[in-house]
Image 1 (cartoon, one colour):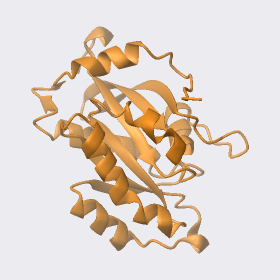
Image 2 (image 1 turned 30 degrees about the vertical axis):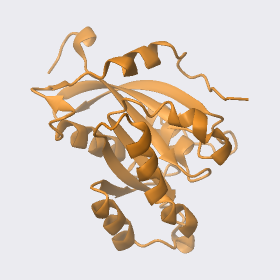
Image 3 (image 1 turned 180 degrees about the vertical axis):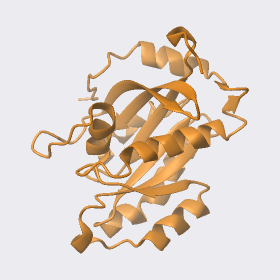
Image 4 (image 1 turned 45 degrees about the vertical axis):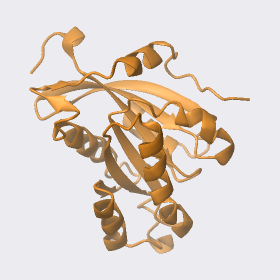
Length: 207
C-alpha cells in the first residue's frame, strides 16, 4: 500500500448518460455520502470532484467528472471525455428510453476519448423505485456484455451499490493492461492538464 499521498495514482473517470437518470445523485452520494432530491439539480455542463479510495490494497485518487446529459451541452461535455480512463454509463431503471440510449453513450465515448481504451460499467440507477421498474437485470447485463462493460444496479437514495459501482470501475481499470501496469496508472498527460485547469466543485457551462 502506498504511504506517500504524492505517489497515489490519479484516475480520471466520467459519469455519463441521459439527463435526469440520477448521475448527480450518484456523484453526491459517493463523494459526500449525501442524498437530497430537493437540492440535487441537473448538471449544467460539467461538475468535478475528487476522492481518494482504496481498492485491492491500493489507494487511488479519483477525479470524477459529472457531465450534463442534455443535448444542448453535448458539444461542451464531449471535450471532457478526452483521456478518461473509465466511465460509469448511467440509465434509469424506470425509464426505458434511457436504456435504449446506452449505445449512443458508448459511441460518444469511443468518438471523444482520443481513440484510447476506456474501462466502462453500465449502471442501472433508481433501484429503489421497485414498482416503476421497466428494465430487468438480464437486459441490463446483456447490454453491458455486448459493449464489453461491467454491470451493476444502484440506488443513490438508499446508497445501495454506489460505492461498489466505483470500485467495480476501478477494478476494471486495474485489469486493463492499456490503462494500468505494475500497480500504477499509465499516464495520459493532457488529462492532468485538464484537471489542473478546473476548480473543484465548480460547474461549467457553455452559456
